[in-house]
Amino acid sequence: MIITRTPFRLTLGGGGSDLPSYYSKHGGFIFSFTLDKYMYITVKRAFADELIRIKYTKSETVSRVSEIKHEIARACLQKVGF
Image (cartoon, rainbow, N blue to C red):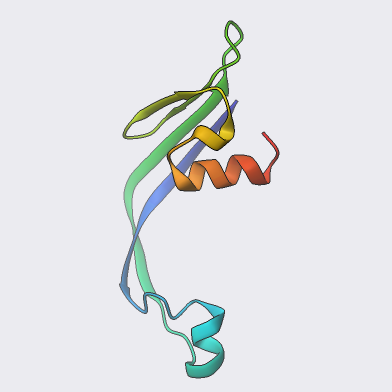
């Protein structure tokens, strides 16, 4: 089971200037802050049916990681070999 708690971050300036293709030529600048509100994501494989369930603002139940619609969750699970 994977459970994450991530604070919401708002970027006020510098969006995109943290990319190497930009800051290597022009320098970088980011101004952001976090709120005292959090995003929780829970991922687990059920014992009964071997399906993957992901809950965020929506709920997904899939049989393979490649079927996950949430791009960030899918990429993270692929990276750790879930």
